[in-house]
Image 1: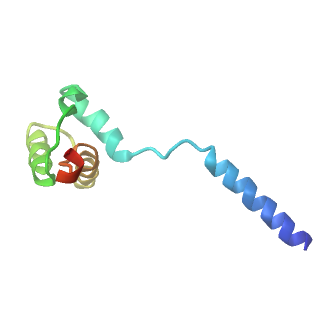
Image 2: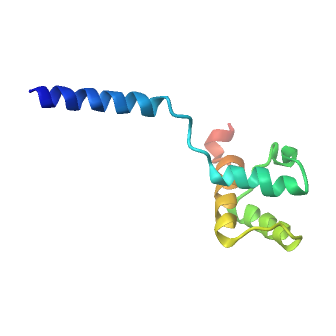
Length: 94
């Protein structure tokens, strides 16, 4: 019985600690903030709603201009931009 109480208290303590942790940093966002702002500010993202393929082409264009991005970073940047600045389904636009 005492073991169950102690285990329950430990679980509650760990849950409370996890609740107060800051949100995990998004590596895609960090890359966009660090790599993309090397040449321009992030105001260019405002109001953008591009498809995954449009973002892919735009990022590849920036890489051809010299943006230092690995294949893995490319994927993280693409996922971040599609998630946050991608096309919204028609039902959300109404």
